Image (cartoon, rainbow, N blue to C red; front, side):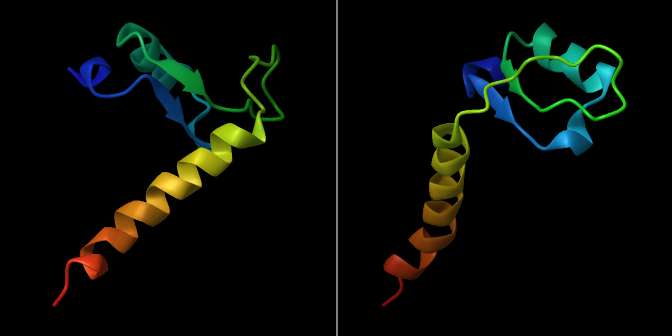
Length: 71
């Protein structure tokens, strides 16, 4: 189950769909997705830049690790 592996799902406005939000909620995972501008009732999300910067750091480390172990 995905909720055993992650606590939050961070994404951009492209993932702001009711069906996606429903699946994320069903898995009991926190959604960090900003609402699209045309959504009638915007859904609050964590706007903390630390969340985004943390995600970028994790992605960078994942890309960097294979080069560290090259010999």
